[in-house]
Image (cartoon, rainbow, N blue to C red):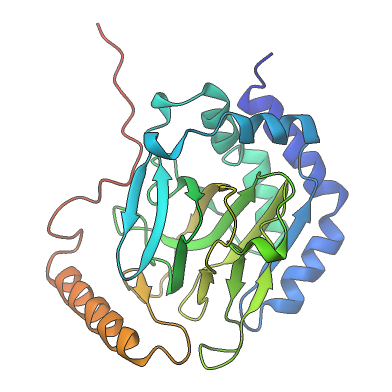
Length: 274
Protein backbone atom coordinates (compact mmCIF):
# COMPACT_ATOMS: atom_id res chain seq x y z
CA UNK A 1 0.00 0.00 0.00
CA UNK A 2 1.37 3.41 -1.00
CA UNK A 3 2.33 5.66 1.89
CA UNK A 4 0.97 9.16 1.29
CA UNK A 5 3.04 12.30 1.88
CA UNK A 6 0.82 13.13 4.86
CA UNK A 7 1.48 9.73 6.45
CA UNK A 8 5.20 9.96 5.77
CA UNK A 9 5.30 13.52 7.12
CA UNK A 10 3.70 12.38 10.38
CA UNK A 11 6.37 9.70 10.84
CA UNK A 12 9.15 12.21 10.06
CA UNK A 13 7.62 14.72 12.47
CA UNK A 14 7.39 12.16 15.26
CA UNK A 15 11.02 11.11 14.70
CA UNK A 16 12.10 14.74 14.93
CA UNK A 17 10.09 15.36 18.10
CA UNK A 18 11.47 12.24 19.78
CA UNK A 19 15.06 13.45 19.27
CA UNK A 20 14.59 17.22 19.10
CA UNK A 21 16.67 18.07 22.19
CA UNK A 22 19.65 16.08 20.94
CA UNK A 23 19.24 17.39 17.39
CA UNK A 24 19.08 20.96 18.65
CA UNK A 25 22.28 20.45 20.62
CA UNK A 26 23.99 18.98 17.54
CA UNK A 27 23.03 21.95 15.41
CA UNK A 28 23.89 24.56 18.04
CA UNK A 29 27.29 23.05 18.85
CA UNK A 30 28.27 23.06 15.16
CA UNK A 31 26.73 26.40 14.18
CA UNK A 32 29.97 28.34 14.62
CA UNK A 33 31.14 26.72 11.36
CA UNK A 34 28.57 24.66 9.46
CA UNK A 35 25.49 23.95 11.53
CA UNK A 36 24.14 20.45 11.02
CA UNK A 37 22.36 17.56 12.66
CA UNK A 38 22.15 13.84 11.89
CA UNK A 39 19.03 11.75 12.55
CA UNK A 40 19.28 7.99 12.04
CA UNK A 41 16.36 5.58 11.58
CA UNK A 42 14.12 8.35 10.31
CA UNK A 43 11.47 5.99 8.91
CA UNK A 44 10.62 2.34 9.55
CA UNK A 45 13.18 0.25 7.69
CA UNK A 46 10.50 -1.32 5.50
CA UNK A 47 9.47 2.09 4.16
CA UNK A 48 13.07 3.27 3.69
CA UNK A 49 13.84 0.05 1.81
CA UNK A 50 10.80 0.54 -0.41
CA UNK A 51 11.93 4.06 -1.25
CA UNK A 52 15.34 2.73 -2.27
CA UNK A 53 13.86 -0.11 -4.32
CA UNK A 54 11.70 2.34 -6.26
CA UNK A 55 14.54 4.70 -7.18
CA UNK A 56 14.91 4.97 -10.96
CA UNK A 57 17.70 3.24 -12.81
CA UNK A 58 20.50 5.64 -13.73
CA UNK A 59 19.52 5.20 -17.39
CA UNK A 60 16.28 7.02 -16.52
CA UNK A 61 18.04 10.00 -14.98
CA UNK A 62 20.08 12.99 -16.11
CA UNK A 63 23.87 12.63 -16.06
CA UNK A 64 25.88 15.61 -14.85
CA UNK A 65 29.54 15.02 -15.70
CA UNK A 66 32.11 17.79 -15.79
CA UNK A 67 35.11 19.12 -13.86
CA UNK A 68 32.82 20.08 -10.97
CA UNK A 69 30.81 16.91 -10.46
CA UNK A 70 29.89 13.47 -11.75
CA UNK A 71 26.47 12.27 -10.63
CA UNK A 72 22.95 11.43 -11.78
CA UNK A 73 19.89 13.51 -10.89
CA UNK A 74 16.12 13.27 -11.27
CA UNK A 75 13.50 15.91 -10.58
CA UNK A 76 10.62 15.39 -13.03
CA UNK A 77 8.85 13.27 -10.45
CA UNK A 78 5.88 12.35 -12.60
CA UNK A 79 8.20 10.02 -14.53
CA UNK A 80 8.93 7.85 -11.50
CA UNK A 81 7.24 5.75 -8.86
CA UNK A 82 4.70 7.77 -6.89
CA UNK A 83 6.36 6.90 -3.57
CA UNK A 84 9.37 9.02 -4.53
CA UNK A 85 7.27 12.13 -5.00
CA UNK A 86 5.45 11.41 -1.74
CA UNK A 87 8.66 11.22 0.30
CA UNK A 88 10.09 14.37 -1.26
CA UNK A 89 6.99 16.40 -0.46
CA UNK A 90 6.62 14.83 2.99
CA UNK A 91 9.68 16.90 3.93
CA UNK A 92 7.77 19.97 2.76
CA UNK A 93 4.85 19.40 5.13
CA UNK A 94 4.18 22.46 7.31
CA UNK A 95 4.64 20.60 10.61
CA UNK A 96 7.93 19.09 9.46
CA UNK A 97 9.27 22.43 8.20
CA UNK A 98 8.28 24.22 11.41
CA UNK A 99 9.81 21.55 13.63
CA UNK A 100 13.13 21.62 11.75
CA UNK A 101 13.10 25.43 11.99
CA UNK A 102 12.64 25.14 15.77
CA UNK A 103 15.45 22.59 16.08
CA UNK A 104 17.81 24.84 14.12
CA UNK A 105 16.63 27.95 15.97
CA UNK A 106 15.63 29.62 12.72
CA UNK A 107 12.72 31.87 11.95
CA UNK A 108 10.12 31.01 9.31
CA UNK A 109 11.40 28.66 6.62
CA UNK A 110 9.89 27.86 3.24
CA UNK A 111 10.20 24.58 1.31
CA UNK A 112 10.70 24.54 -2.46
CA UNK A 113 7.75 23.04 -4.32
CA UNK A 114 9.62 23.47 -7.62
CA UNK A 115 12.55 21.30 -6.45
CA UNK A 116 15.01 23.89 -7.76
CA UNK A 117 18.27 21.87 -7.59
CA UNK A 118 16.46 19.33 -5.39
CA UNK A 119 14.86 15.95 -6.02
CA UNK A 120 16.77 12.68 -6.36
CA UNK A 121 20.52 12.12 -6.52
CA UNK A 122 22.18 8.85 -7.57
CA UNK A 123 25.91 8.20 -7.51
CA UNK A 124 27.66 5.14 -8.99
CA UNK A 125 31.25 3.90 -8.93
CA UNK A 126 33.64 6.80 -9.59
CA UNK A 127 31.00 9.50 -9.12
CA UNK A 128 31.86 12.53 -6.96
CA UNK A 129 30.93 16.07 -6.06
CA UNK A 130 33.75 18.58 -5.56
CA UNK A 131 33.83 20.96 -2.58
CA UNK A 132 31.27 23.69 -3.23
CA UNK A 133 28.91 26.30 -1.86
CA UNK A 134 25.28 25.88 -2.87
CA UNK A 135 23.57 28.56 -4.93
CA UNK A 136 22.53 31.19 -2.40
CA UNK A 137 18.97 31.87 -3.57
CA UNK A 138 15.80 30.34 -4.97
CA UNK A 139 15.00 30.39 -8.69
CA UNK A 140 13.30 33.80 -8.44
CA UNK A 141 16.24 35.24 -6.44
CA UNK A 142 13.76 36.34 -3.78
CA UNK A 143 14.51 34.02 -0.86
CA UNK A 144 17.85 32.89 0.60
CA UNK A 145 18.74 29.22 0.79
CA UNK A 146 18.98 28.29 4.47
CA UNK A 147 19.05 24.51 4.89
CA UNK A 148 19.97 21.47 2.82
CA UNK A 149 18.11 18.24 3.70
CA UNK A 150 19.70 14.96 2.58
CA UNK A 151 17.95 11.65 3.20
CA UNK A 152 19.99 8.55 2.33
CA UNK A 153 18.32 5.23 1.51
CA UNK A 154 20.90 2.77 0.14
CA UNK A 155 21.02 -0.27 2.47
CA UNK A 156 24.28 -1.32 4.13
CA UNK A 157 26.21 1.79 3.11
CA UNK A 158 29.54 2.14 4.91
CA UNK A 159 32.44 4.57 5.17
CA UNK A 160 34.57 2.39 2.89
CA UNK A 161 32.04 2.74 0.07
CA UNK A 162 32.91 6.41 -0.43
CA UNK A 163 30.07 8.57 -1.69
CA UNK A 164 29.89 10.16 1.75
CA UNK A 165 29.05 13.73 2.68
CA UNK A 166 32.05 15.87 3.65
CA UNK A 167 31.75 19.11 5.62
CA UNK A 168 34.75 21.39 5.31
CA UNK A 169 34.01 23.05 8.63
CA UNK A 170 37.62 24.14 9.14
CA UNK A 171 38.06 25.55 5.64
CA UNK A 172 39.33 23.98 2.43
CA UNK A 173 42.93 23.95 3.64
CA UNK A 174 42.14 21.33 6.30
CA UNK A 175 40.67 17.85 6.24
CA UNK A 176 36.88 17.68 6.12
CA UNK A 177 34.58 15.93 8.56
CA UNK A 178 32.94 12.90 6.93
CA UNK A 179 29.32 11.93 7.52
CA UNK A 180 28.56 8.46 6.16
CA UNK A 181 25.63 8.28 3.74
CA UNK A 182 24.10 5.66 6.00
CA UNK A 183 20.83 3.89 5.20
CA UNK A 184 17.75 5.65 6.58
CA UNK A 185 19.80 8.65 7.75
CA UNK A 186 18.68 12.28 7.48
CA UNK A 187 21.31 15.01 7.47
CA UNK A 188 20.23 18.64 7.77
CA UNK A 189 22.93 21.24 7.20
CA UNK A 190 23.03 25.02 7.02
CA UNK A 191 23.83 26.68 3.70
CA UNK A 192 25.70 29.98 3.81
CA UNK A 193 28.87 31.62 2.50
CA UNK A 194 31.10 29.30 4.54
CA UNK A 195 29.27 25.98 4.25
CA UNK A 196 31.69 24.21 1.93
CA UNK A 197 30.70 20.58 1.43
CA UNK A 198 31.35 17.74 -0.99
CA UNK A 199 30.81 14.05 -1.68
CA UNK A 200 33.90 11.88 -1.94
CA UNK A 201 34.32 9.43 -4.79
CA UNK A 202 32.13 6.33 -4.74
CA UNK A 203 34.32 3.23 -4.41
CA UNK A 204 31.71 0.47 -4.72
CA UNK A 205 29.44 -0.93 -7.41
CA UNK A 206 26.42 -0.06 -5.28
CA UNK A 207 24.47 3.09 -6.13
CA UNK A 208 24.21 5.76 -3.44
CA UNK A 209 20.64 7.08 -3.47
CA UNK A 210 19.59 10.32 -1.82
CA UNK A 211 16.37 12.34 -1.49
CA UNK A 212 17.20 16.05 -1.48
CA UNK A 213 15.26 19.14 -0.38
CA UNK A 214 16.11 22.77 0.32
CA UNK A 215 14.49 25.22 2.72
CA UNK A 216 14.62 28.98 2.19
CA UNK A 217 14.11 32.11 4.25
CA UNK A 218 13.72 35.81 3.69
CA UNK A 219 16.90 37.69 4.47
CA UNK A 220 17.95 41.33 4.30
CA UNK A 221 21.52 40.26 3.46
CA UNK A 222 22.31 40.35 -0.26
CA UNK A 223 25.16 37.85 -0.24
CA UNK A 224 24.31 36.42 -3.67
CA UNK A 225 26.51 33.77 -5.25
CA UNK A 226 26.12 31.01 -7.80
CA UNK A 227 27.00 27.42 -6.94
CA UNK A 228 30.73 27.81 -6.37
CA UNK A 229 33.16 24.93 -6.77
CA UNK A 230 36.73 24.37 -5.64
CA UNK A 231 39.20 21.50 -5.95
CA UNK A 232 40.44 19.33 -3.16
CA UNK A 233 43.67 20.30 -1.36
CA UNK A 234 46.69 19.81 -3.59
CA UNK A 235 44.73 19.91 -6.86
CA UNK A 236 46.15 23.29 -7.87
CA UNK A 237 45.54 23.21 -11.62
CA UNK A 238 42.00 21.98 -11.19
CA UNK A 239 41.40 24.65 -8.56
CA UNK A 240 42.57 27.35 -11.00
CA UNK A 241 40.03 26.28 -13.60
CA UNK A 242 37.22 25.93 -11.06
CA UNK A 243 37.87 29.42 -9.72
CA UNK A 244 37.79 30.81 -13.26
CA UNK A 245 34.61 28.89 -14.01
CA UNK A 246 32.87 30.23 -10.88
CA UNK A 247 34.03 33.77 -11.59
CA UNK A 248 32.63 33.70 -15.13
CA UNK A 249 29.28 32.31 -14.00
CA UNK A 250 29.12 34.84 -11.16
CA UNK A 251 29.76 37.72 -13.57
CA UNK A 252 27.03 36.51 -15.91
CA UNK A 253 24.53 36.32 -13.06
CA UNK A 254 25.31 39.89 -12.01
CA UNK A 255 24.21 41.01 -15.47
CA UNK A 256 21.38 38.50 -15.92
CA UNK A 257 19.71 38.08 -12.53
CA UNK A 258 18.18 34.69 -13.38
CA UNK A 259 20.90 33.60 -15.77
CA UNK A 260 21.03 33.65 -19.56
CA UNK A 261 18.57 30.76 -19.61
CA UNK A 262 16.25 29.36 -16.99
CA UNK A 263 17.80 26.56 -14.99
CA UNK A 264 16.05 23.37 -16.16
CA UNK A 265 16.62 21.66 -12.80
CA UNK A 266 13.12 22.19 -11.44
CA UNK A 267 9.95 20.16 -11.33
CA UNK A 268 7.58 21.48 -13.97
CA UNK A 269 4.38 19.62 -13.23
CA UNK A 270 2.06 18.92 -16.12
CA UNK A 271 -1.11 20.96 -16.06
CA UNK A 272 -4.30 18.89 -15.98
CA UNK A 273 -6.09 18.66 -19.32
CA UNK A 274 -9.42 20.43 -19.67
